Length: 513
Picture 1 (cartoon, rainbow, N blue to C red):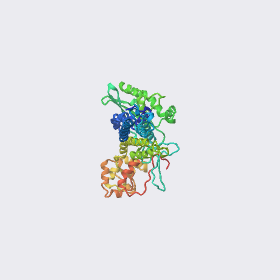
Picture 2 (picture 1 turned 90 degrees about the vertical axis):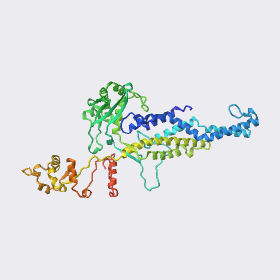
Picture 3 (picture 1 turned 135 degrees about the vertical axis):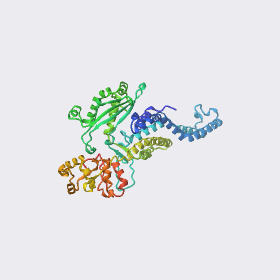
Picture 4 (picture 1 turned 30 degrees about the vertical axis):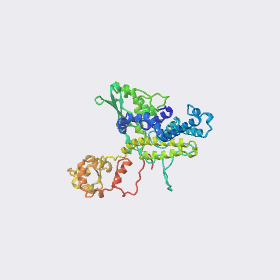
C-alpha cells in the first residue's frame, strides 16, 4: 500500500487517541479497566486498520467501474493497433500524436482519463483523513462531545427543529450532567516496571470537608499527606492519601489562590515527599518524565506521578457530561457535515462530481465505524450513570403521638434523641422523668408534636414502630431524599407516577434561585 501523507493521518490518529482515551488506559478503576483491556486492539485499529480501511473502501467503491473501463480500454487498444498499426499506441499506453484526432483514439483517450480519475489518489485519501479529523474535532472538547464554537460565513451546525412555535436548544442538550461531588472517590493506576514487575498506585481520600449540601462555596483543594503514605508489599500497592479541604490563611498567602496556582503549588511541593514514600523500583518509574502526544514541545514533560496527580485533581474538580445517545447525535451531525462541507452544492462542479461522490461514500463508511466505536465507550459510561443506585438507608420522622405507648420508655431512654430535643426544644431530663426516675407520660401527652427520628435508634426499634401502622403510605406526610437530582427522580418515578403535577429541580450549577 502506498505511503499516505503522514501529517493528515497522524493528526487524525492523535485526535482519535484522545477520543478513545488511550492516555487513560493505565488507570485501574471503573470504565478505565475496560479501556486498558482494549488498548492494544484500539491502537492496532488506529495504526494499521484505519489507513488500510480507507484504501480498501476506495478499492471496493471503484472496483466494478475500474474493471469495466480496463476491459473497454484493452479492447480499444487492440482495435487501434489493428486499424492504425502497432505504433498507434505508445509503450506508456497513450495514443501516438499522429493518430490522436481519429474518433477511436479520442474515445480511447477519454476512457484512459476516466480510469485515472477512478483510481483513488493519495490526495483523495488525505482529504478523507482531513474530513474525519475536522468532523470529530468540531464535536469534541476536553473529554466531552459538545459542539464547539466556530466562526465562518456559513453555519457549522444544524439544530433538530420540527417547526414548533417555541423551541429551546442548548449546546449540551440530550446529555447527563455529572456533578463533581459524585466523583469524590479513589483513583488508581498501574505502573509497569519491566523486570521489577507491575505495581499499583492508589490515591485515596482520607478526609473531605465538603460545604453543606455539597453546594458551591469557597474553593477547596487536595492536600497530599505523604506522612500517611502506606506500602503494601504483598499487594505491591502504594497508597497515597489526600485531604480535601479549604486552605489555611497561611497556605493561601504562601501559594496564592488565582488561576489554580494553589493546587499546582501544593502538588509540586508534595511531589518529592510522595516519591520518597515509594519503594525504589516504583519511585524510578514514577519519577520518569516522558513527553506524551499532545503535550507542548516547549515545556518540560512532567514526572509520571505528577501527571497522575494533576489528572486526579482535574477529575474531582471538573463537572462533566455523559451523552444519552452519542451514536444518534453524531450520525445526525455527520449527515449535515457531509451535505454542508463535503457535498456543498455551491462548490461542486460537473467535472469533480464522480470524485466527490467517491470521497463522500468512503468518508461516510469510515466515520460510521468510528462513531460506533466511540458510542460503545460512551454507552458504558451512560449505563453506569443511569444505573439505579441502592437506597442505603430509609428513616422516619414520627410525631410522638403516633409512636406506640409501649415504645415511649425506649424513646425517653435514648440519650441521642434526648440531646436532639434539648437542642431544638430546650427540654431537660426533668421534663421527661419524675423525681423517682419514672417516665413522665403526661409531659409527652402534652407535647404530642415532639419528633422521634428513627436514625437515632436501632433498626429493630424502627421496624417495631413501623409495624404499628396499618397504612404506612397514608400516614406519611412527606418524603425527603438525600440524593443527586437524577437518581432522586428515578427513585420517585414509579411510586409517584402521575401523582405529582409539578417538580422544581434546581440544577447544581445554578445559584441564588
